[in-house]
Length: 320
Image (cartoon, rainbow, N blue to C red; front, top):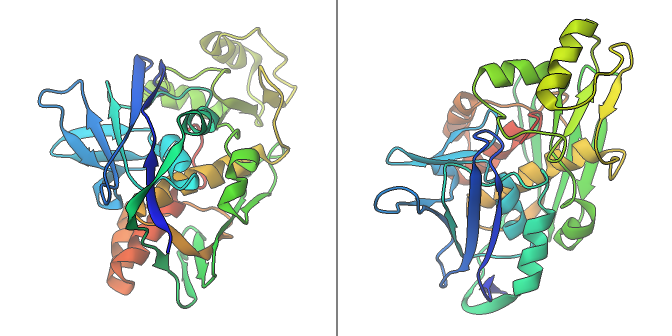
């Protein structure tokens, strides 16, 4: 029987927050058997702890937000994905602000640090959610869907589709969690140029830049407007007729955007509280279920499936 695991030692990572732009430090600590994932806001009076579970998710628009008793922590999905993919069951995460640092927009630094400090096996037996029969759900309004099939192991398939000539349909798959490090962890978050101004107006992405995101220019705008956005992004003015990627670094993979969506989904699956044995397929044209839809799902499926469905709302968001 497989046993639960935790970190051998603590590690910390520092950087700016994607949405707040402030300097942040997050520390991942070993935790006892059956502890699960918990996040502690050490900057708040009383240093409250938030259980990192689906029941505490209160926002999913531009990153996963967890809330308990009015205290929030956001942009947790990359760190959670690394823990989940590397088989960590128990961890106390301490952060000195309202969100995790964005780092380079991927999960690779979390993976590197977990491997550096090492993992230790614990006494308690690891518990799984085992998918025993096919489950399919489709939202007719958005076209979003999820298919869950029985399987001896875990696998995940994600298809993303945008109304864009730069990003056509992209597919990503993870057949084995052992491949996460090499095939998924380094995939970076992304944003469309047309989204930047509205996000800034909403008080978001104050810490976003070309060092932590892939920026995609796929809909032509006026040269004047494009120049203004270039100033905001801190990049040289470019030809507004030239569509494409605006990057400091080249793409790691041609389908990096789809791989990052898969990364986000794994981070959300971590909030279920147990590893899954089953094949999850997100074949929707526009994978974007809302929380209100998921509340309706719980009336049809068991609580576990409700939590599982929570993950697919992220697959079409950008810059997370």
